Amino acid sequence: MKATRSFALIILFFLALPAKSQEQANQTYRIIDNGTVQNVQPYIDALNSANMKYHRLKNTRFIITFSTGVKVELFSAAELIAAGRNINLADYPETFINRVEPIFSLGPNNIIMEQRPVYGKYH
Figure 1: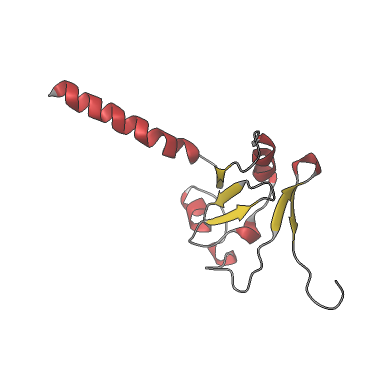
Figure 2 (figure 1 turned 135 degrees about the vertical axis):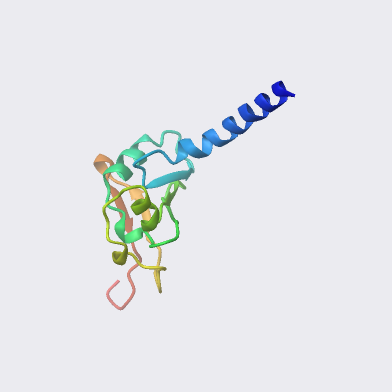
């Protein structure tokens, strides 16, 4: 009985480990799909140095997609505050209204670039 309980606790520990390791301390995002990219380290470097404030929601996680298929889940502003970040929750919207999602790509020196479609007579 005691061995079965210990075994069950070990299984639960290992099942919880991947979920916890994806949300490490001081992280503001989680890569959920590598797309066609084999090495996501340049994306990690770019995300760690980027300000993703204008792509983050107040209480809901938001997913951005790169042209290579890499998908990144941005943690909500409320989650960042709970993790100890000093940000103003009022600066973040509940939802994006009439937003055309940009196409993200990785530029030179691991800079995140976004492309937006241009509408109107001058495109």
